[in-house]
Length: 121
Image (cartoon, rainbow, N blue to C red; front, side, top):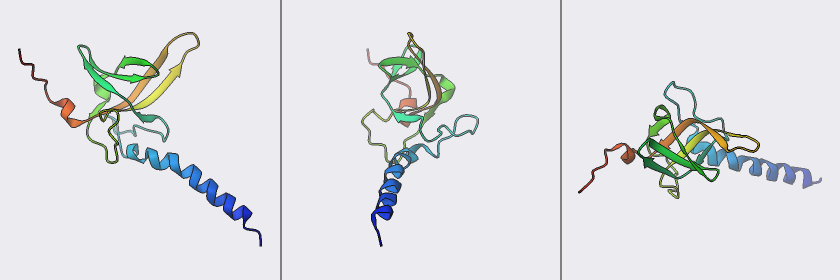
């Protein structure tokens, strides 16, 4: 009996499971209309900042504005925190000779980001 095919199947099964498991942190997220934020490969952690125009996120070496209606204020279980708890779900459209256009399905920020900022003068 040859164990090689069984071993290859086991290795392949484990290798294909890792991306899905890593993406499970987003699987329960819905947008404002109740649709899923992700399709198993379009969400990722990213840095964010508050600007005078609203929330901006950093992807593909550029800061871009995030539509207010796409923002979800919540914490995500298993978030490792390396981006300050910012996450983006959407589509990056790469245009030849031009910058990348980011179509945002959902932007996830920690709930404390929703609190008004207090400025001491």
